Image (cartoon, rainbow, N blue to C red):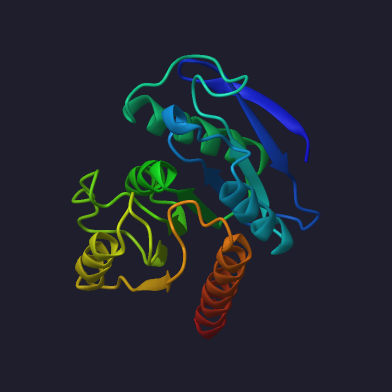
Length: 221
């Protein structure tokens, strides 16, 4: 997984990028938890999602947002971090100009940033949100949400409590053409210390199902 440095809006950003052997492979961008609470691209769940997309044949990148690791700049309350995510996606699209499928996967604060990016980039076709902080951030901007995705919650998560996430899922599922695949790991807290493999398996199951469904739809046209 080669290290990459690319231009962000507030200086250079550090990432790890895997380029698929498949021509015009789908792309996936992975977003880490809150930088002020130790969130980096090396977080276990972030890394697990990265490897899962790699296993599925994607070209995939995880990166450190501004002020984290060797990335320049400083934390910007979420606003600048959305711009960092957009810059990361721009870099991936520049390297892969013919890829037509893009997924975004975020964990905790990264789920919030990822969903914000989803609303700004109509080319994104799928998303994964693990433990989105639905009680701390207003996800009302997902109106309408452009596509369905996978949402994962921990039954014992005190930082992103499951009832708040379920309320968000229920709201999204009322929207036209949006179906959220919602999975709750009853024994997981916010760290998912013993559930990393389960997160990876859920991601692979969901993405494989959705990609197969898309292929069938294209074949039927």
